[in-house]
Amino acid sequence: MNTKLYVAIAMTAAALSLSACHQADTQSEAAEAAAAANQAADASANAAQESAEAAAAATSEAADRASVAVDNAAERSREVANDAAAGAAAATADAAQATADAASKVAEKADNAAEKAEQEAAERK
Image 1 (cartoon, one colour):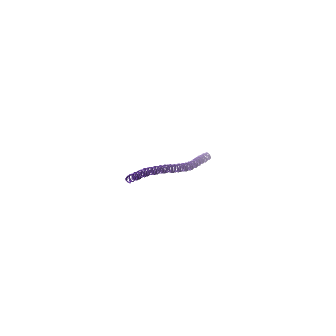
Image 2 (image 1 turned 120 degrees about the horizontal axis):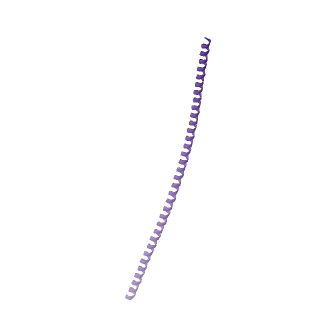
């Protein structure tokens, strides 16, 4: 009878030992899973940080490019306006010269007509 009792005690001890091993394995697996989850969370946080930094850099670069484009457009607009103003000034100067030339011709014709009228008047006397 003692043998049966010892066998029962040994079997109970083996079952408890097996249960303890299984529980230790389960706890170890849970710890490993928790560590893996922590690593995944860290990797996700790092990726999110890198993504945010990349987005900020891209936004900053786009803003810089837009600023340069606006500056270039403003400079080109000034150049076009200056060219247009210079063209208008040249056209105004040309028109003034043409007006002066026409006035000179009219004055010359008036002088010629006056001389002719004086000659005709002198011939009549």
